Amino acid sequence: MLPFVLLGIPAATGLGCLLAVRKRIVHVLNVLGATGTLLLGLFTAGEVFSRGPVTGLKGLLYIDALSAFVLAVVALVSFIAALYTVGYMGREEEEGIITEKQLSRYYLWFHFFVFTMLTTLMANNLGVVWVAIEATTLASALLVGFYNKETSLEAAWKYIIICTVGITFALFGTILAYYSSVRVLGEASDALNWTTLLKVAHQLDPKLMKLSFVFILIGYGTKAGLAPMHTWLPDAHSQAPSPVSAVLSGVLLNCALYGILRFHIITSGALGPEYSSRLLLIFGLLSVGLAIPFIAVQTDFKRLLAYSSVEHMGIIAAGLGIGGRLGFYGAMLHLFNHAVAKSLMFFVAGNLTQKYKTRKIARIRGAVQTMPVTGVVLLAGTFAISGAPPFNIFVSEFTIASAALKQGYFLASVLFLVFIALIFAGITYHVSKMAFGSYYGRLCRGELNLWTAATLLVPMVFVLVMGVYVPPFMDSILGQVVAVLNGGL
Image (cartoon, rainbow, N blue to C red; front, side, top):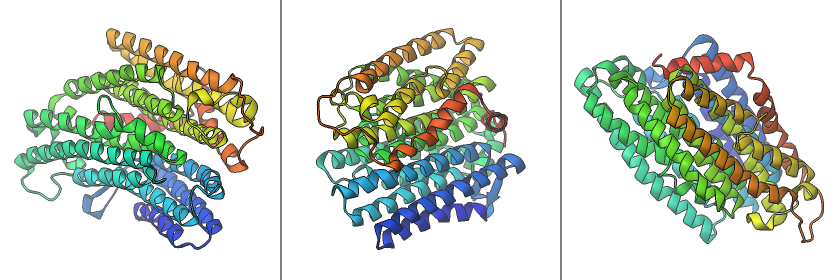
């Protein structure tokens, strides 16, 4: 019953915001709906972690430790983004950039976007997972093109076209997995359920599963932002409203990666872990490496953050490819750390772009003096996403590097360390000028409003705490997720 109520909250919230007649009511419904999604999402995840997987709808619904973990991250980041939206979109409406009607439509698609991501994580049937991931594209594309400008509409169309091509590849991979399953199970109604496929993984046709995983990795990898299929990501992230960019980068990419993980576990059961792990490691390192030159020459702050997301999705993929308990643990810890740190940075970007009226790095100067809270968080968040201690991403990157060395991936570990060092240099070079340079325009000192400044402190707590201390409950949760990744039900 709980999963259905959880799905109903964002759906009802979006419809309520669309029908509301006053903007104050719209904002209140948004906050209440996001709070309900967070609380029930965390409660559902807690039930899974304490009592085991939740099933329903004759096996169509299935939430295990892996899906519960990603579900909790989606609920958390979406909640913080919904809070930030009150101040950010409220200011957009005050300045006449959007109308009250557009604000209502924004909240409709924002909460429907959350609904599609939750559906992705609750579905047991891999065909339904494919449909839900495609639905995330449709919902988020409307948010990418929300401002109806030429650049935003172009980014939305590019996003739809590239991700639709990718999702078509994923469909081929899903069909191949189904064909392999039918040869073992017959035309059973649960032949495409993940739990069923995992039980018979050792009987699946190895050649078909090899081909299936290649299509899945390319298909869902396009949506996850893995290079070289990442080309939609910088445009979409830079053109979307900043709260949407935070959700796109913080959790949407993880939902696509979740689809890859489900097939990775099945493929490992059919072939052994070497084949799919090697591909994940190669694409992961490629993503990190290709991000370097784009970060180095970047002139747009939100595009800089988008290429940083390509890097971090590559780091997660590399950790999964390295495998073993330490590699899986580091990858899942990095998934959480990146989600909160990158959403924080997109909130910072939203504050800066509204204050300075530009996304251009060269035109944003003296942020620490102009916006004391945002400027300080800009510096802290930059060190966090760059992998510097004592922030959270350093811990997960160090864990992944340790796993690589422990398991004998010496070349991969050297490349990994060199790549992240170069990216650290590139990002800090750009941001140091933004934070401390001299601004010659006429700007009043101070934050935009209380909402946009205070919201920064919520993800900042996670960035700081997880950099020095992984709570026992988080360690236990990650242990359960690692057990699933190792082929457990």
